[in-house]
Image (tube, rainbow, N blue to C red):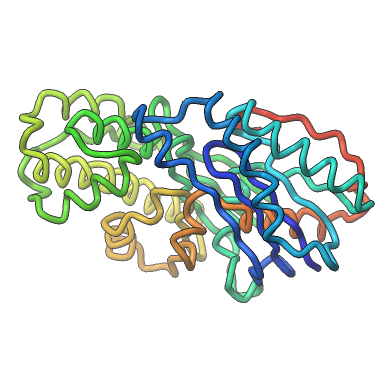
Length: 321
C-alpha cells in the first residue's frame, strides 16, 4: 500500500511517498531554517506563508501514480501552518477519490522508527522518549496505535531549552545541532548544573531551572557551558527513560524527535539501558518529515480501513490529543 504523506506542523514543508509503512520511495523536505535563524526562532505567520509558497513545488517532486491514500498531520503544531497541509491533503484526496487519514504529529515521530526497517522486527511493549523543540514525552506503546503518555514536560521541552540556551550563549538556530557541535570541544563536568528529578517516582521533566542556571554562568565560556548543559539534559532524559523501561517491563526502548539525533543522548541511553535501543535510521527521519506521517497513516488505515473516506472531517489542532 502506497501512502502520500504531508507534514506542515511547524517550519518544514514536507511531502513523501511510503509503501507498506516502511519503504520510503520519496521524501521531500523544504526547510525554513535560514529564514527563522534571522529571528532566533519560528515566527508562525512567516512559517505559514512559506508553506503556501513551497507546497506546490514539493508536490511536483512526487509521482501520484498508484497512490492508495493520503495521510496528513492534523496536530499538534502551529495552527496557521497545519491548515496549509490539511487543506492541501483534503483537496488531493477529494480529487483523486482516495482515503484521507489524519495523523497525530507525535505518533508520526514514533513511527519514524519503522522507516527503512522490517516492520515485524519490533517487540512490544516499547517505551519511547519523544523529544524535540515542541514536545517532550515518555510514551508506553503496548501495540500498534496503543499509546499511553507516562511522562511529559512541565515547562520547556528539551529541544526548546537547547534553542534558548544556544541563543543565550551566542550560538545559532536551531540550538540542538549548535550546542552539540560546540560541546565537542568542552568539558561536560566543568559546571555542576542542576538536574530536576522532581519526585523519586516521577517520569515528568522540567528544564526551566536548568536554563536559569546556565544564565548565571560565564556565557563567554561557550564550549564548556554547552557541554555542561548538554550533559545535564541528556542525563535526565536517559535516566528517566531507563526508569520508565524498568517500571513498565519494556522489551525495547526508542528515541524519537529532533533531539534523538543528539550523539551524547544516544551514547547515554546505550550505556544505561541493556534492552534493544532504536532511533530513526536517518537524520532526516528525526526532524519533522512527511515519511513518518505516511508510516503512521499506514498503520492507522491498516487497523480500520472503513474509518477513512475521500472526504474526512479533519480539524487542525495545536494540542497533543
